Length: 289
Image 1 (cartoon, helix red, strand yellow):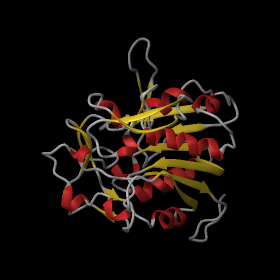
Image 2 (spheres, helix red, strand yellow):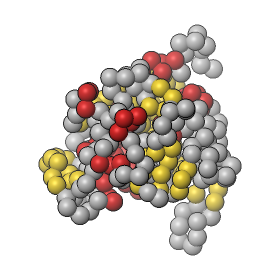
Image 3 (spheres, rainbow, N blue to C red):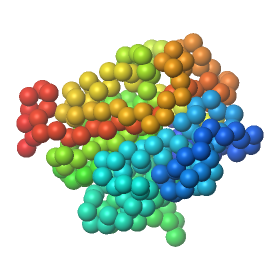
Image 4 (cartoon, rainbow, N blue to C red):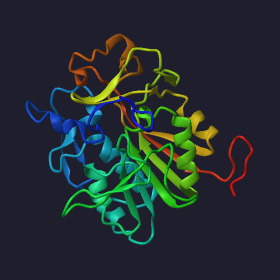
């Protein structure tokens, strides 16, 4: 089944903290600060080989989420901080998140100018869905058709989403459009280090998530991600808070992936956080309005 934003959906949502599904047979990856809860704690992993998905023993957040928040705090020049320090900046920041679940969303959801969203197959981008008594209403959003005016947000966030978008160029243009001048798009993707970005159309079908919650991967992003971001008017930067694998050990999907096997046992990606700043002039020569 194809989703409205081009994602092929088997079922469910893979946007949560992947490590949570493996709470048996834990092993300790490292002891360090979790930037979600602010605690010095163990990060643990079970069957998965994808160590960036290891989970905080205190709050359950994935390491990649903690890394994203660490980089966000650095951008905001908040020293020795945690996610709640961003949430206390009420009235000062407007934030759009391509998720309405998970630890990052939960830590920011009470901010005055924060908007959490979800893609829902078959639901028009911009539609608000009622989620039941006691629950927040849900804004449905297709990243290829963001339902906000130009120059609306200081920050846009996405976690492991962009690789699932059929037309990532359109999505990047939309993110650029809704960011204020000087705003940032901060996001995570599984970066195929040592390779160039390539479409997976016509190649072996590859999914993220846990069965039956799987999403088709349209794009393997590689070392040219900065060039791609720059082409869309951003000033791009890759930060690598945790490097677990040598380049030659990064997963080769076409050789290793098998939907019938437990794919968390073969995924190997370093924890990479992308920072894309909205510059004043695009590389195609068009000036911002």
